[in-house]
Image (cartoon, rainbow, N blue to C red; front, side, top):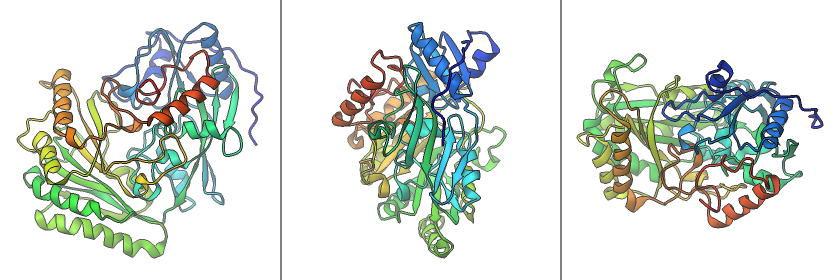
Length: 461
């Protein structure tokens, strides 16, 4: 039982140049600093209520983030307050119900560790340091996604502070319309202080990454695309063309030139499923390994926590510029277009250009505002503006890729994958956007959180 009648305390907002401001505004993408007029890190529900009431009383708009990811996708904070949520309490697992209660500010690494002790897993992202709440509100594309669907569908309940400073709960019985909107609409409904998410059995996982010289990319890409069209739901993978710099943490063989990587995970829900999972992985990787010998191969049978290390995402904040599209089935022409603008000889300044496999449960209707994805692949491309590579060069090449893939672009995006607020995209259809807008108007008639949701997640776009 959680107490909702709490007395708010006074919160002091920090201004630019102070340590508290620097802590609250810290983001993962250093190329997209939020730069609000004031900021505060809130650690209790009482502090959240006080901060929201103080901001609303002063007529200041409010923006929220947890771990500071997806900063590039968010609108500028102008004349407002940024709240960073780091709520106390820790992860609580109800193994019988297969549910985790997670305070805002918690990372996926903490949830994975807590769930694994009970033989369970969560539909987490590819990096341990990504925050749970922002990822869920933005849809969430997991390496378990072809088995479980969008991560937002796993949201069972949420506790949040509304624009008037009140703490409310949304679940199947209490305000199910708010719960529906929270599942993928991209925030802007209040300050989420805790969520309850559904877990699923996970005995073992076959996971890892295999890298080849990009000289073999055309044949490898064609083989991966053929396999992905009939792949089992237990498998979710991605194909990446990478231009990795020679920096600490990058194996030398991967920094010698452009490489192609296939990574992902194959779920074995029970011990009896391990043999099938290993077979599914071999059906993917065996033909690829026959095309060319890998430079590095880390695929292995392991515990679910191993999935967090397969993608080799950077752990430290970096500046980067990127783009995201949802694509229809590519075919030979689409594959050729992708290779032409991202592969060897393309002159691409992108460090990584990814095709994430969708289909399976991703395509099935879910219980939220963004319940399913009608696309075959998610494209994500990004690079850091270092040395001779400028922001302008990266943005120009993002446009080049977008134009080349235009015939296969669905015109839709997933909020948790969006890298830039300035790029076109839409997460919700018109009916869902109007329905979400009604929920926002009910909870926040003065528009305190009006700038806190992603472009494309409202009726206005």
